[in-house]
Length: 297
Image (cartoon, rainbow, N blue to C red):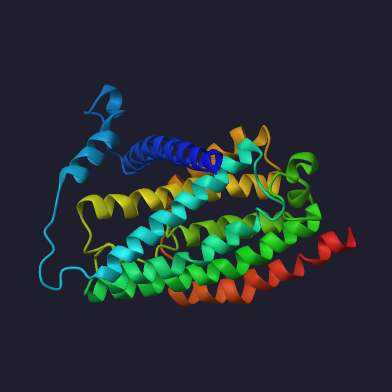
């Protein structure tokens, strides 16, 4: 029990450190893509900018007034933090070789609670913008879960089990059998993390942040950090699922993270009905059809 707790803590600390520099790199790339400089004042070349922003947000405090925020919204924030800590524990368990036989299925269990945390976080703010943003984000998460579950089943058929360390011996078998699954998985990750072009928690017509509109200080920091940790975890998980992990993670994981930055800098937001039609009418049938590939093989 203590070993699992230490692994979870180390995984969370490592993820937070990576996310701090990932945010800095994203702001740099977004700046140069828009013909301007990114953060370059705090520390050498702006390396301490993320830590300065974290300190500024943590020291802020907001008194909760009448109808400012309900207890339900705090439950949503705490639930999202708990889900991210569970992701980090699964991430640390992979490298400590302490995973169990069905460890890959735990990702499906944790992912299934994401929509509930988003709904609680938006519904409890007493804000119409927060409710609309949470509803769009939650339904996008459900659309992701359907295709993601199919991809997990496909990988389980390739590995003959759901042990997450199994692909170490098989290598990029899933990619070689069906490269299309890899493309669908990347699109699913963009949807789950509410990133461009599927950032439906926000809306251009509302000009607000979405379900986290009414949050500030520590609560906004928690929501912001959780989003970026989920980006890192799913980028890493896609390397494990499709390419088998090992030494390929060190090469492919930075490419996945760069893809998130490139998508935010260049791609426009896809219309919502196109998004729904693609996931339920194209993505999910293709994932289900891919089941027959490892069965025949």
